[in-house]
Image 1 (cartoon, rainbow, N blue to C red):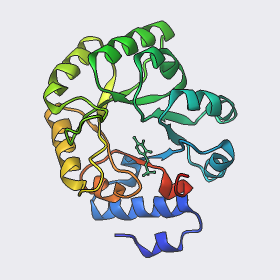
Image 2 (image 1 turned 120 degrees about the vertical axis):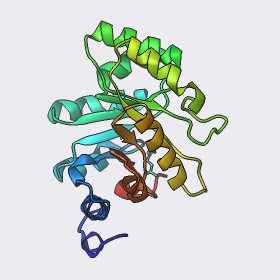
Image 3 (image 1 turned 90 degrees about the vertical axis):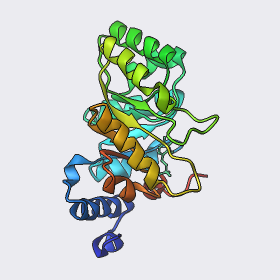
Length: 225
Ligand SMILES: *Cc1c(COP(=O)(O)O)cnc(C)c1O
């Protein structure tokens, strides 16, 4: 589905932007309705600065500790940067996460919900949340079971947490599209507009199936070492 403009693009970011624009046209969607999150985990600031220079402002990290080391100076220099947490979150890191991040994609259990509600009250800061769903019912994978989603969402709404959508990481090694379609249906069923799905290998497929947030790392920064 890659269009000629993307192949000619001068940088990886320009290429991904062209692919998003092209896919939006095919999907009869607006490219602006899809947020590109540049996943900068494991990348040093020197690798991030060129993307900032090209105008990218939304970044994602998967570990609170790493973000604390890397982002304060960048956030101070570029106050319009928005930082998303896309990795599993331990309840004892909820306070740090609420202060550092502008959006959290990994709410997946009642204990974390309680910790985040407390942290948001304490910081007097409401951070938009995605509920992460273990869409392929895999052992060892983050995300709540599909069967637990209604209760978790009810609890989040009762606690007045700003849940804006659902997030998933489909099983590796098999076609992701059915899982993206399932996440979109669950979001529809629960009246949630946000769908955080799609990575370097499959963000166009995810967009065709309604992704509002795509999380792209290696296609922007190169393979992780
Ligand atoms: C690392 C990561 C990504 C980006 O993966 P790429 O394949 O490098 O694009 C997206 N989402 C999550 C949750 C990740 O941990």
